[in-house]
Length: 160
Image (cartoon, rainbow, N blue to C red; front, side, top):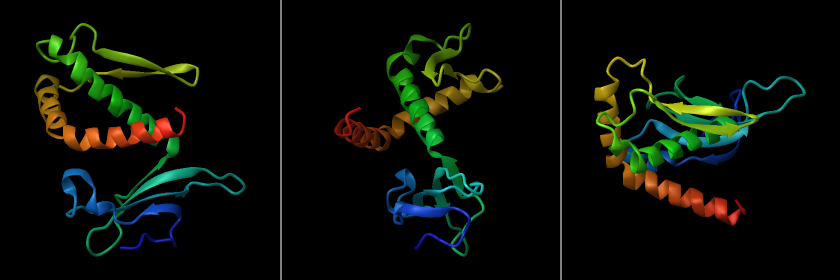
């Protein structure tokens, strides 16, 4: 399925077969493609690049398609990596998988400040939900691990 090029987001680099590799939804996904292109929110004379997940209902392109600035895509990747690291190396030390007195997992320095990574204590069912989260993370370990190894390889090839 071809990603539309007549909408506000202007695709430049695309993966039009994303539905075939969309994790556990592979071959049965509404996420039909990914693109990097010119952001839909661009103002005259100002150009931003964004990443977009293109979703299709089977009949039309979905309004649930998501567009993110590239730095947010990378911030999400950082959050995924730090979360996975926490559950591999630290969570097992606590009865409820986190320190109830100090739910902050990390502060990652970015742009002269820091992104705080913490367990969401405002979630009234956090003790149950964190167990389910850990289980799902464990079940998806092969899918996530494959992508992280690919990302690591590419980053090394780029000199990072």
